Structures are given as C-alpha cells and as structure tokens.
Image (cartoon, rainbow, N blue to C red; front, side, top):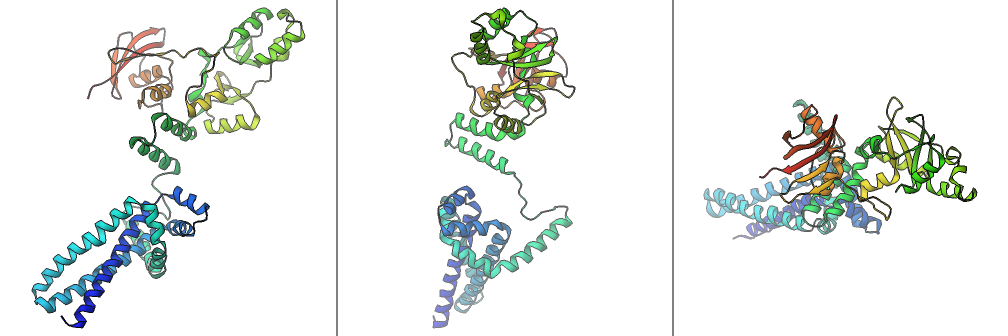
Length: 422
C-alpha cells in the first residue's frame, strides 16, 4: 500500500478510538450516581465537580456526544471505503461495510459501554476532560438540534420541557431502595425504614392515629380515686380527659404530673383535682400531612395531639411515637401491651382483627394491599365489596382470599386472609 493509504488507515483507527470515547462517555455520564458524585465533589475532587456541572444540562451533553460520535463514525466509514475501493475496486464497498460494522460494534459500542456500565463513576471521572471538550465543540449545535427536536415532538403532542424528569426525587429514591433490596444490598427492615421515611409526605394524620374506638381516655366526672387508679393502670404515659362527652376534650393528663400531685397531697387520691393538673389539649385536623405533623411536634416540643374532623368532632389521637413507628417500625417497652390482631395459621392463612391497619399488615407480611381508600383491613374489605359483609362470606381481590370470620353490628372484627396460589 502507498503511504497515503497507510495514513488513511491510521486516521480510521484514530477515529475508532474517538468513537470509543464518545460512546463510553455517553454511557458513563448518564449512568453515574449523582449522590456519589456530590460526595466526591464535597471531598474536593475537581473532576467530580466538573461532571456535576456537565450533567446539569444532560440533554446538551448527550446531544454533543451523539453529534461527535456520528461524525467520527461516518468519517471513519467513508475513509475505510475509500481505501478498500482502491484496493479491491467495487467489491471494496461490501468489504468496508462489513469490516466497519464489526469494528464499530465491538470497539466503539459494546466494549466502551460495557466498561462504562461496570464502573460508571470511575469512567465518568476519567473522561470528564474529553466530555468538556465535546461540549465546547458541539454544545451550541447540540442546543440547536435539541430545540428542533422539541418543536417536532410538540407537533405530535409531546411537550418536553427543559430539565423535566419523569420521576420525582422521592420516586427515584424509592425505586433505588427497591432495587437495592431486590439485589440483596438492603435487608427488609432497612428497606421498610427508608420506605417509611419516604412515605411520610404521602400520609396524613388519619392514616396513623389511634381511632376514638380504641382510644383510652379519662372522664373528668369520675371520682378522683377511680381516675387515679385508671391512669396508674394504663400502659400509656399521657391520656385525654373529657367532660360530658368524648367530643369535649378538656385536657391531657401526664402520669408524671399525676404522681407529683399525689405527692403534694400526701398520696390521697380523693384530694387530687384532675382538671387542675391536666395540660391544655392540642387539636389537629385529620388531614394534616404526617411530615408536617412531625415537624409541628418537634417545633412545639410536644408528644401528643387530639385529632378532629372537619366538624370539630374527635376522631382519635396521634403521638410522636406513632409517627416515628411509621419509620422504624413498632417500638415496644416494658409497659406496652403486646400488640394483638395478627395470627399465622398452619395452613398458611392469616387471622387478622378488623382494626389492624393495612400499613402494619403490609410491613409485617411484606404484602402490597392498597391503603389509599381505607386505613384498616376491615375498611379495605368494605370498600372493595361496597357493602358490610355477613359472617362466612368470602371475597377475592388483590391476590388474596378474604373470609369474614366475625362481625359485630356493622363492624367486621375478624378476617381470615390467604394468598392465592400462583
């Protein structure tokens, strides 16, 4: 071959190397972890800071890399065709097509992208100067091309806004946690804790409160001796005090305040005035977001609030512990009554009290029953059936078989649930 042909072959090889860099850079930059980059940048890594700046305009970066990659691929194919035409005549077109396809697929597509996918952070940091050069050379052209593409998509009803993401930050985190759990990087408890933290913004106080039917409270009109005995026998530190009716909450009694008051009257319960030692109640709407309520508890340095509906009637109560348990799971101490309501049967079914919250059941058994329309498992059955079922009635939905075991008046108090096979 003549020296000119050797130079052309060298140019083709150099262009394939450039194509390698363009393809690998695109994959590495799009697959890099932003959290890892931020951590490296905070530690003083200049290349990590450069990559962060580049991926802020991801559409501009990817467009520049694609333009550069197509240019070098087309030029390499054209040069290879010219060389093989001189060597083999018209058959050189076929040889050039086959040869360049093999070379580009192996060395400019599969190899660099596989390498970049295996170590996206390291690869992205390594090629960051090359990516900055590509954006400098083709960035303006990439911006113009992206503008044309957006206009064309708009004609077909697709409104692609700048910087628009298909997923919110919370959804991305939730998806990452689910993937890590599936791959074995997170155990179930870790997944549940992180998931509980992310779920706070989607939940309301009514989703975690203790309903008024299960709420332990004190009638201020009871004899002082009975009030003191009731509070001391309760496993709870704080209890609401009502007068006349449960909707008239007049205070919150703390066991420590009661003990202090007893000490001041020489431990004579008859001399204790419950209304004088009860703290002022704090009422919150049942539609308050759980994240907002947590912040309010911390801001007020409070632990207890009474939940009311839109008419001002008492629906239940919520505590700081209830919200924390949504994140870390059930918190038990030596005074807690063991939670009843879920019993595993030998045949694989589960007997559940109707008042058990759906979220607790999902967390305990790793189920995915919906909790959008109902809070308790009994409420889910009533919502799905659009009726109040009779005892022994059975229903199938959400991949489970539900059998009503016990009903009291209009309340479903016990259910048997079994997962459907297959």
